[in-house]
Image (cartoon, rainbow, N blue to C red; front, side, top):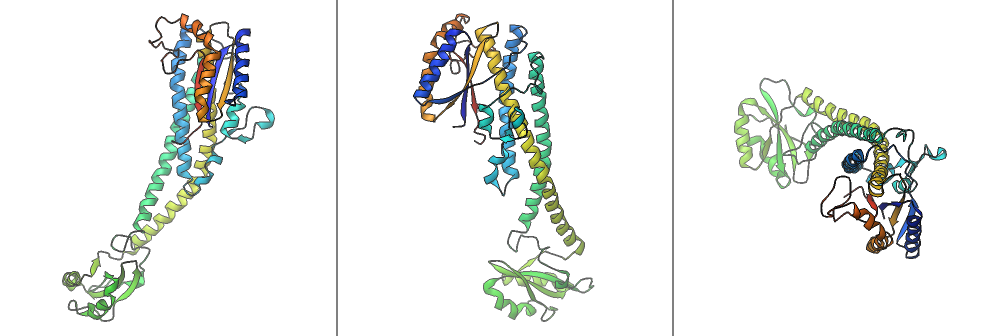
Length: 391
């Protein structure tokens, strides 16, 4: 499963024994895989400031999760022709141990082997400064994501629109990639070449009648230059002054004159535009995918650090000072075992509820900084991590 439960309990002897009981029961019953989740000790400040930080971290957590999901979706959209390889591009930097520093690792391994990045988020700084660093980092990634994907998507849309023009039937598609200069009589004061769409069953009728549809049609001037499933595109040359009469007679015979006048500059411009857009898309693809891979990793790592900070702040608010708690990461083995796992945890840590509840006048009232909504409140600190990036 890609689901994790990040919990904490006080670090005194009684609760360390409770954690051991939890490990024993969950292991024997094959409910979850458990590992220690090491969180360094920070400069706490006042409890009032922690209450404010708790609220801020909750919002930052939701923002970070939303951001990495948007980035994952962007990778899917960019890798349109290789969607099967998306997952191998959604990795995190391997870890902080020297031998792993330059490796990439899957997200589950990163979470289960998490180590705090002391260089990027120094624990000697006040807690509020660490949170501010994370918030600014994620905000900058989001700003860059918007601008980079907007530019790429505009290019992609323009290209798709141009490609659509060459994918329709003969009535609607562009003709610039079909016709050539040699198909037309150009620069004549009197003559003009028209393009006529003829249904396939009517080819013979067209050949027999086109010269007599109106006066002043040039004999043997028709030529089939393109076909689709329903019909063919024929040229016909006539005098300019009979255009309207020819169109009327053609329509009566179910032949359609396509409004198209050959302009060499326009045909050249359209072809060059397609070439340019294809080239630009190819040039942007590599750098954008590399940026997404690097910054997805950065945002994901920041998100897991935020989870660690939330556990720290909630544990101090719940269990008090001096700081003394143990955080544990649980990975439920299967969806069907989560209810039983929750029952085990609630049973093992039931004694904590009395301590936590003693500081609460009314458990139905939410107090900022304390997880007290009936839906989320457990005797122990609890946060959920879901690595399912696609809805």
